[in-house]
View 1 (cartoon, rainbow, N blue to C red):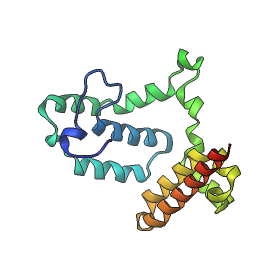
View 2: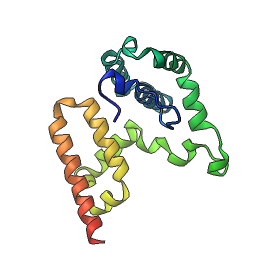
View 3: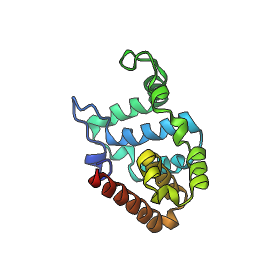
View 4: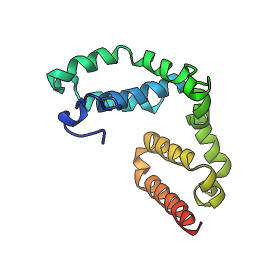
Amino acid sequence: MLDGDPPLVFRYLPGDPHPISYLRVLLGVQMCRHFYGAGPWDTLELSWTGTHRLNGAPHETRAIVQDSLAILGTVVRAALDTPMRAFKGYSLRAIVMPERVSPAALNELAARLGNALFTSSHWLWTEPLRIVGLTGLQLAVKPQDAESILDLQRQSMLRLGGALQTV
């Protein structure tokens, strides 16, 4: 869980491989900026930092967070663009291909496939992560349509789950 009261959002657990929740959200925002430039994640950052003020962080983690904020961009570039032995010399960016889930690519997918993206078993099987990405993008840019977007997402994932049960 990422959100909650300050003790949860700013909780630091030594040895935990996950960043402090406050930083994890901002790391995701920085990744989106790195790949796509400005977008709805900028609003997410403003909302997140407005809701969770750094002065509400426990004293023992405030310094960690402040120091980390200054290097988030460097961390993102190193983690995503550096060739790694674990990936046979490829960077993580080369493996996950973020271009496939850019807002432009997701909108093009939706325009090209229409409702079939959410109802066709072929598309549900081959594009489940992009479907989740598309509905997340739609929620960010059209929050007034949240109920219908979430229902479409839920129905498509139920179809996918039903298809998995028949295999």
